[in-house]
Structures are given as structure tokens and as C-alpha cells.
Length: 116
Image 1 (cartoon, rainbow, N blue to C red):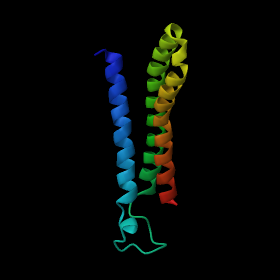
Image 2 (image 1 turned 90 degrees about the horizontal axis):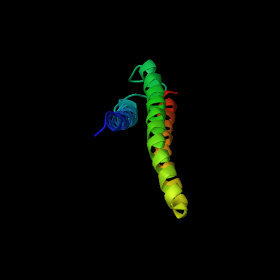
Image 3 (image 1 turned 60 degrees about the vertical axis):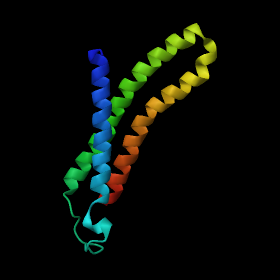
Image 4 (image 1 turned 45 degrees about the horizontal axis):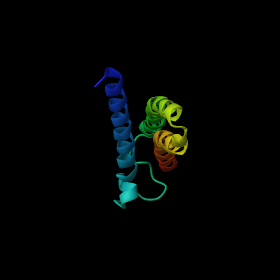
């Protein structure tokens, strides 16, 4: 495996773990679980960490999506050059790679909504 592919896999894995961590942070607070925090009380975690988690979820997922689209896009161009009828399939694959950024954006919106 080339160092570039290893970096892409590690970046995608890290982004996935950050999104999962943000989701766990979002849904594990006592206020959400009904564990005693009353409406209007202070949040169970530091809001600054929530903003940091939202920023990291968006930034790292966008970075991973850029790496993925770069790899998939270059392979798609090569495949379309040899067989032009593959254009529709390749557009779907590039769209799946772009979905990584959308998932990170959704997680950050959920985190920001939870903060206030």
C-alpha cells in the first residue's frame, strides 16, 4: 500500500471516529437521557468543547472528502477515457465520496443545535 493510500485511509477513519464521538457527546448528556437536568439549566458539558467538536467534524470530513474525491475523480477520468459509457456510474462514485463532507456537516449541525 502506498503512503498516499495509507494517509487517505487513516484520514477517513479519523473523520469517522470524530463524527461518531460527536454523536456520542451529543446524545450522552444527562439532559438528553432524562437524567435530571431541568429545562433551562446549564449544559452538562463545556460549550467550547462542543464548538470545537463541530469545527473538527466539518473540517476533517471536508478534508477527507477532498482526498476521496481526488482519488475517485482521477480514476473516473481514466475509466471514462477508455469507456465513455461509464460516465453515469462514475458520477455516482464521485457523489458517494462527496457524501463524507455532508455527513460531517450534518453532525456539526446536530452538535450546534444541541449547544443552543
